Amino acid sequence: MSEGPIIRLEGVDAGYPGALILENVSFSVARGEIFILLGGSGCGKSTIMKHMIGLNPVLSGKLEVAGLEWSERTRAELCRRIGVMYQSGALFGSMTCLENVLLPLEEFSPMKRAERVERARALLADVELEDAADKMPAEISGGMRKRVAIARAMALDPEVVFLDEPSAGLDPITSSALDDLVLRLRREKGTTFVVVTHELPSIFKIADRCAMFDKARRGMIALGTPAALRDGSDDEFVRRFFNRGEIHG
Image (cartoon, rainbow, N blue to C red; front, top):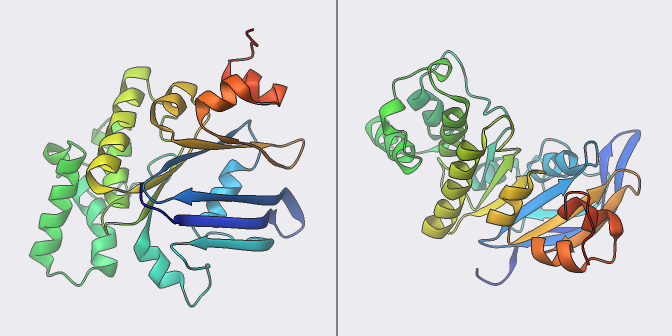
């Protein structure tokens, strides 16, 4: 991982007008890092991601992605520099897998049509789904749909890819294969990944560091590697989370 953060939050209050969910959140994500946002249901991890991808402005504080703060002036530039995979995959059911991956290329790429199609097919090959190019989303499995969604998120060769609950609804074998894909893409392309999840096997397999949030305390309560949070946190709630509710030793 190269030096210098790709994402930086300073004193961020997260939520929506009239609904403060998290207060005074500060952390940074290094380039090339796989960074996990985690915590219990309703803790604010998805809210923080929505701020990071520009769906909602922060209530206060400073949030930078790739050196830019979200605004109408920077939106087009930042949309080219990030990719997002939503929890359900969010593929368009009336389009083939290839057409879904083509969407960001059609919108933002200056390449000729034939080059865009070639790029989209190469992206499907990257996620081992080149044979699914002409299939509709309803014709493939949930795990395959998430792979197509990752291919679409990677279409513009983004600096950061955000994954929202990538393991949700998947069996353990499919989930592990998806983790392997994330690790391979980071290794081969140097992409930074920010992942919302509470799946401990995935967290321990792919995470460089984690930020943990707590609904009751309305803030970030832990930051570090999974092993350090499991074994050395001063916060009993954090230790219990990482030890599946049990404290050993």
